[in-house]
Amino acid sequence: MTTALVPTDATALPDKPADGPMLFGCILDGRGGATEIDWQSAKNWVPSRSGEVLWLHLDRMYEDLDDWLIESLDLCEATAELLLSNETRPRAFRERDSLITVLRGINFNPGAEPEDMIAMQIWSDGQRLITLRRRRLQTPRDVHQELMAGRGPCSAGDLFTTLAEQLVIKMNHSIVDMNDRIDEMEEDEDTDVEELLSEIATIRRNCLALKRYMSPQHEAMLAIQKAPPPWLSEENLTDIRETGERLKRYLEDLDVSKESAIVLQDDLNNRAQAKMNQTMYMLSIVAAIFLPLGFLTGLLGINVGGMPGVDSSNAFWITCSALVILMGFQFFIFRKLKWL
Image (cartoon, rainbow, N blue to C red; front, top):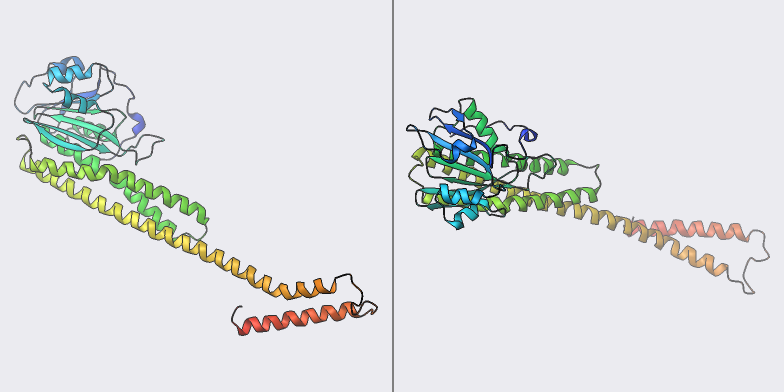
C-alpha cells in the first residue's frame, strides 16, 4: 500500500498547459523515477525498453484533443467524449486491455469549496497512462513530485493505484474538518442559535455533495476488482480493494456526520423553542398579574357620578395600598398553583 503524500500548495499549479494540451509528461523508468518528456515527443512515443511507462497529464479543454485521442490511442468516439466530458459521475470500465476510469478529487484550489469535487479521467493500456482534468487538481502534481524524487510508482498499475488512493485519502480532510466543527458546536454556548443552525445546514449540504460522488466512486473501485485489466498486478488489486474499503469508511463517517448534524440541529431547535416557550410563559404570567389591576384602575377611572373617594384626599393612597395587597395575594395564589 502506498503511503500518503504531503499536499502541495495549489497556487503553484499552472492554470494553462505550456506545451500543447500537456500540463506535464514523464516516462517512468520502472525503478520509482521518471524523466520529463515534451508534447511533440509524447505524441508518437514508443517504449525503448521493457518497463517504461508514459504518463501524460493533459488539460481536456484543449482544442482538437479528441482527434489525438481517437487517432493515437485508437479510442472510439464515445470513449473519447467521456474522457473530455465536464459533467461525469465516477465510473470504471474495460475496453479490451485498456481501463477507462472517471474519479473525483477534493477541490483544494484557493477560494473554492472542497466539496466541489473535481473530475479526473484516466485511460491506460499498461504502457501509457493518460490523465485529463479541467480545473487544477493537486493529486497528480504530488505523485509527479514523488517520481521526480525517485520515490514514485514503478509501473502503470502502481501509478493508477497511487492516483486513486491519493484522491480518496485527501477526502478525509474535509470529513475530519466537518466532524471537528460539529464537536465544537455541540459545546458552544455563546454563539447565536440562528448562526449555528445556518452552519449546520451548510454542513448537511456538504455531506450530501461529497456523498454524491463518493458513492459511485466506491462502485467504480468494485467494478475494477471484478474485471481488472491484465496489467494490474495482485498487489495493485489489493491496493484498490483497500482504497475501496477506505472510501466505504469515509462514506460511513459522512453518514455519522450527517446524523450528528441532524441531532444537533434538533437539539438547537428544541432549545430555541423551549426558550421561546419560557418567554411566552413569563409574558402570560405578567399579563395575568396585571389583568385585575388594570381592570380595577380602569373601573375607577370612568368619568361618571357617584365614584367613591372623589371627595376624599386619602382615596388615592387607599387605592394604591389595595392594589399592592391584591398583587401580593396573586403572587401567593400563583405560588400555591406552582405557576411561579
